[in-house]
Image 1 (cartoon, rainbow, N blue to C red):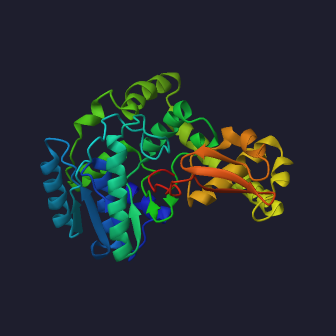
Image 2 (image 1 turned 180 degrees about the vertical axis):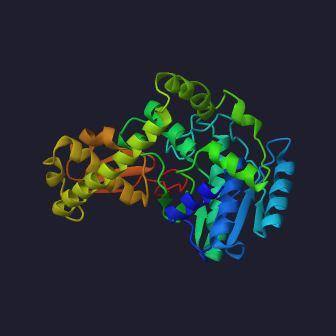
Image 3 (image 1 turned 45 degrees about the vertical axis):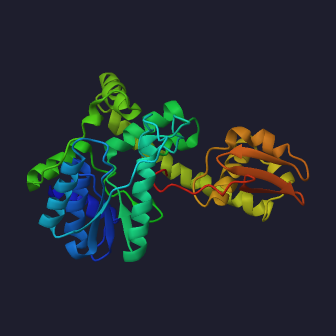
Length: 336
């Protein structure tokens, strides 16, 4: 228990006296996170949000469990009961934080639930200040990276989830799922089990139940090696980001199309992605595969690149904006 607490404290994402809103499902990870947040920030500075979607027979019991836990810890609990919109499908979403599009064009139930949760959290946090804390663990990080490698080609696939994305923090990214369970057991804190975590219908569960055991059979430290590689790549990404920033600064504001065309191919792709991200106000959908088309635009030309974004050339400069008839894409704090 002390080990988890001290590692989270050392991470600096939870601070004494700083308000934090914990996303509380009632599972082991969120229960552990809530307990640690109380220990570090103080119960009076901690609140919890539980979303009861009414999608499972045990939903009411999950809500009651969260209420009892918050009562025990002296934490204010916010409960939201969003109504599932008509037409929302049941196709499983990608793992938390993958940044991929839902698989079903008719709508994705998990994506809808995630959007509702983060919208409610943002509204509460705006009133009380502080951060929003999600219980993603090192185990979730490994599963996310492996899923991205299979489903989302590109550099981002290897960078995983960030410990901080704006007002969203993930204090447990250095802690495994087994360690959160051990912490809860040591503290006498019960948690709820979601039966859907065992079904192979969901991509994330297949990664956990099939892919990870296969990797461990190749090397017992497979998960640790994935996390170490992720750490190294994040360090190197910071250097690469500085190179991209320098190239865009030299290209002007807005950047001259000719200057972008003169960049090395890899730097062109990264520069266009950065411009798209800036336009989206966060992380835009991947546009690197459209680089050649975008840079082939002539004066006055435009190209929809996906995700509600359009590239346009005006006055010899390249700009990204919203596609006609659509609002600019809004970054999802759950998708770093």
